[in-house]
Amino acid sequence: MKTMKFYKASFIIAFLASSFTACKLSKDISVPNANLPKTYRGSRTNDMPSVGGLPWKDFFDDDVLKSLIADALQHNNNLQIALKNIDAASLSLWQAKFGNSPTVNLQASALSTRPSDNSLNGLSLNQALSRQHIEDYTLSATLNWEADIWGKVRDQKAFALAAYLGTQEARKLLQTKIVADLAKGYYNLLMLNAQLEIAKANVLLNDSTLRIIKLQFNSGQVTLLAVQQAEAQRLAAAGLIPGFERQMALQENAISILTGSNPGTVIHDRQLSSVSIPEVLSAGLPDSLLAFRPDVHIAELNLSKANAEVGIAKANMYPSLTINAQGGLDAFKASNWFNIPASLFGSVAGSVLQPVFQQKKLKTRYEIAKINREQTVIQFRQVVLIAVGEVSDAYLALEKLKTEQDLALQRTNMLMVATRNSKSLFNNGMATYLEVITAQGSVLQSELELAGLRKSRLDAMVDLYRAAGGGWK
Image: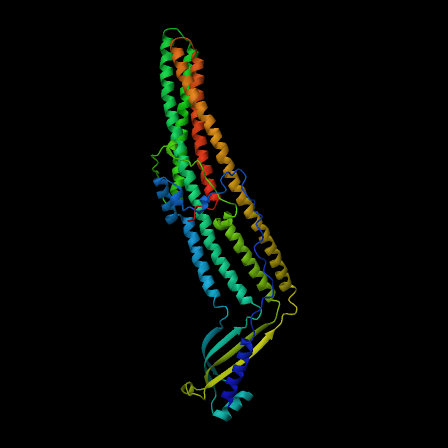
């Protein structure tokens, strides 16, 4: 009869608890209006699809570069850490799905007690059982369950889901950075190689000039000053070579580390001038940033997490309904432990806890959670603003650098012609050695600048690709 009453009470409490349905106490804030412009500043191609939707294998046409990127995506240590973060967040998400489930613990215990013979317990034990000690053996299971009346568990699940998706987007964001850094590093290596060849060619040109000036010095046509200045010009050009070689080695080391390899030589047999730059590059309409940029997605997910934290903090201020149950076997003799149903015992209880005075901790946490959510909204707007600015910067850089490169190319071609003419005039005694040295120095600086401008255009191309959200596909 007692067993039937126990089960009846358990059923009533469980039914009452299950009759509560979770309700949302706090109102979520939706993703704010991004306030995007209709077009990017400097853009001329808004009607074309965004390059941000292109996989990196389709955007880059250099097989060596694509091989380096593939190695980096497989072996880069920072990217491996990001993948581990995804695994950890996945486990947390899986665990959060059990938020509505009860906690169950199993316990086995044995107790032996010998009271004093002169105590009331000792005298009672001797009279009742004719024994001086008593034993108690218990095998029990305890169950604890909190009804999700105010949606706290639901918000915890929402937080875990947003955190998991955030790690996915963080991996994408890191991948876009690795792709862009590798591309820029590779193009920088090509530029340094081009500048190294320019310096070497200029040294040979200075050698030829120096030989002629020495012959004229030996014949008394020029002074020793001419020889010294020509030698200084040659040494200046020669001094650039070890500098470029050092920078190339450092760049190769940086590329190797990005690919998860020990520092070493990086194959770069392609000429900088052979790398094509598309005449038209488009980031599409500004709305495409919301679809392609991982940092924008992270900002949206941060708002979801902030909404969940506000909901959890609000729910903690309201009553909580908890069900506690315990049942198992209990006997004062080990031989009677499994004497069922005599050894069975059980209890079930339901309680409602309403926080009353917690030194304003719960209220303060709730208010702080709301402030943090407001900050998240502002951060979302800032992320979008930065994204639009990065695309506009890349557009402007591409346009202006193209003009600078065209002018630098014209200047270089003109200086090359001037160098040849000055040398011919010098050989015929119609120009001084200073004019020859000046022309050679000018063409050297102009060629080096031209290589730097072409590399800057390639960097701007990569910047536009990344700013448009490309690189993670």
